[in-house]
Image (cartoon, rainbow, N blue to C red; front, side, top):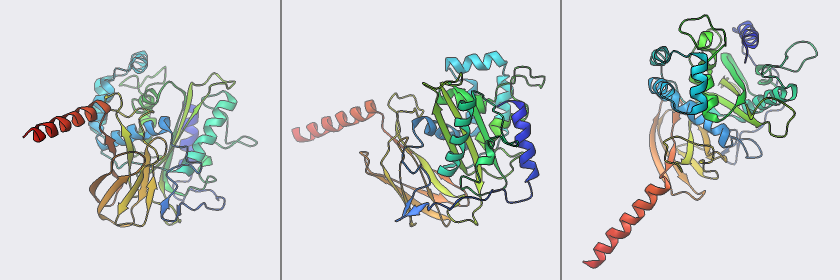
Length: 361
């Protein structure tokens, strides 16, 4: 996203700063049917997929502990990401100092309406073969954030911003491009190497500024492959919309239990796109709603009232698991990380060995 687009977005958002900012929407879909919260994944059940959930997982982990995120980014060893950091001359000490000053924020829940708006912009980018396509003027298609209201999502003033990246080599590379916020190429701002205002990082971390000062509690991330498409973008185009919901409107919430069911297959301590577990039923008690994890393993359940909540996981081919958490005024992150295959095999072997000893007695 070039500076021209950032200025256009900032101007549009500031103009709506003192009003509820949502365009008239089509007939509202029903997010809760027979007790199941449906808006945490698309109607066809295919999204968020592994690529999209990887960005959601990294975002929510980063928000929990900003100083740790700064240290992670400064020490990252992904070759493509390291090359970009070195190319832009990112000051890694300054990067860590900046993350140390960011307050922790609650996780964001995936929302299909924000996803639909993000998907529309990703398709525009690919169709126009432009990381920053012309939009928003007369006889032009709507820009990224102008798509949110028509997609059916109502947000409050100061509660919307977005990121877009046309050259996503991987979820990790894309996450780092936004959260390191490297660029632009000619950057006179000190410290060097990071985008003025860190405008992309603001969305990922829900770090308030004059564009969005509300906590960004909902997110829609679209990852669109450019394989076989007539474009120089890619290999994947990523677009993310971050929002604070207008809870006066039905099926809009700002407090969830949210997380990912996943198995660390490569034992690297981080979620990868093929590690999510879909089809797991997640319940939150007390409460009237449940969710079924998307293919990427993500889920979200609105919580109506503060208090102790038991989050239970079952089905989908995973061992049953439950965790008790205290939910106050903000969303709470509850991941279910299955044992990695090697650890599970070792545990089973130990149990069998113990059983053999006991039988021998």
